[in-house]
Amino acid sequence: MPTSRTGRPPVPRAGRPAAAGALRDNPVRRLYLRARKAWDRPLTAYYLILGGSLLITVLGLVMVYSASQITALQLSLPGSFFFRKQFLAALIGGVLLFAASRMPVKLHRALAYPILAGAVFMMVLVQVPGIGLSVNGNQNWISLGGSFQIQPSEFGKLALVLWGADLLARKQDKRLLTQWKHMLVPLVPAAFMLLGLIMLGGDMGTAIILTAILFGLLWLAGAPTRLFVGVLSVAVAIGFVLIKTSPNRMSRLACIGATEPGPHDTCWQAVHGIYALASGGLFGSGLGASVEKWGQLPEAHTDFIFAITGEELGLAGTLSVLALFAALGYAGIRVAGRTEDPFVRYAAGGVTTWITAQAVINIGAVLGLLPIAGVPLPLFSYGGSALLPTMFAIGLLIAFARDDPAARAALAMRQPRFGRKRGAVRESARAAGPRRWNTMRRSASAARSSGER
Image (cartoon, rainbow, N blue to C red):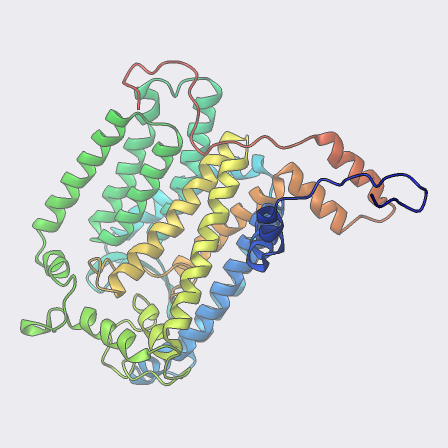
């Protein structure tokens, strides 16, 4: 029997299973574990929201400049006219984003009622003759002088998110959300008031986004199935009546999946959007080399900018945009799911529902899977009225992501203040203890009188 140098018999070592060793040595497995570890870091949501939103905005500015040049020249305007207006809106939106990201949660809650009152006031002014303007058949604009206009209904989305989140958070603190009347009133009547003001101007697309925000808030609040389905049925019935009684909306519904313009070119915009995507190929025809923007595709720099992106940047460009929106949506869900503050959960969930639903509706219309609703692609399409409240909402998500105790500790360790040692920061982070995971939906401890899920 072989012995060691000391004269003692060698101690047998427990061999690891071959399968476990193979899994550990697998490069794909190691890459997956490394990505999962990075994905679970405290600052992942913060960087995804900040980086994803900035990349979408910058890429949107590039595509607005490319897609709007021909339209500007056709209107006898400088080729960079729309780009300069969008760039100015992005600068103002950047200031709003920074301000919102630095505001405490209490200040966000304090702004809920003033923003709601201001949005309602401006939406009423839209219907006043001589003040409101009609664009593309919709009476939902106010002139600010010169070529600058504002669409108050875009700020109604932000108002509903903040006010609804504050309302539901206060009711949850008082344990009132177990009663269906407190869950619905006054949230649903106020949302229907905003929807009525929007529909007076004929803007069906924005009304759909507000409805999605309302249902997102109700779902986060833990609305029972009967209540949720009941409100959804009423909304679907109202939407069906509004679509059925409007020939324009019926024609848009008939253009889903169309491959030919049809009689009187009813589906011209939808079909040429598909043409633009189809001619882009894998990597596109090149930035600025779109053919459809030369008068063939209406609203190339607004509602159908995704089609121009597909034509010039190809499948790679469109998938990149989709990946950025998916990352932004995931980060918003993560912020809403990990917080213990009810207001933060409702506000983050409402903003995520807003941006995700609007992106799905816009991209779905360009792909011919949904009717054309006339809503811009968030942070991407031309339009300062849509960009400003959206960037403020992104600032909300950034503030909520920074407010997490683990994220605060990580940011403090990366950027220590003058005279503050890293060891003290680590001790404070260690004293905070492990974070307890939360689900997005409110866990109701008491039985609901209106039915359980």
